[in-house]
Length: 163
Image 1 (cartoon, rainbow, N blue to C red):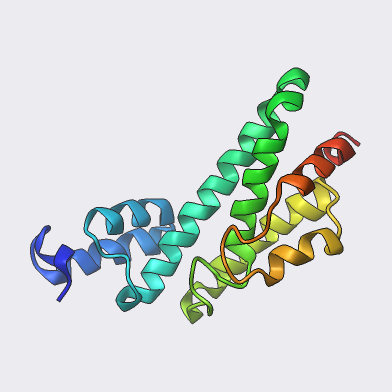
Image 2: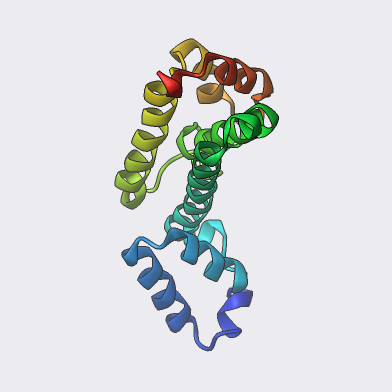
């Protein structure tokens, strides 16, 4: 039995709450709830995968907002940091270890595809990343296995989002 199941009452209400977050598309809320209840595990594969992906996607989105809110001076000082965050969290959402799971749960495939499309639109469309530059992130078998600092600097120098 799950340790977290008894913190909020019976098992069924915990699972219903997870389903409610999931059905609402509130994956960040799902992650917070599952973490609080100590429920992130392979036993709740679909929900755990969605929760972890939701967290990574939220970090990706936050880094994107921060990056585009920088003025020119801040961009030179901290732009590569936010680009690095975008690359890391974008890779976590779209890479082979999808939210630390090697295979997408069939019920998560649509969500994963939507997240990937946004990551790819930003990287390929806005930042002008090439397939060759992104390739190491697509084959890395572990989150954070690719050092993105060099690519962040290249993208910052390229400045394709200004074109």
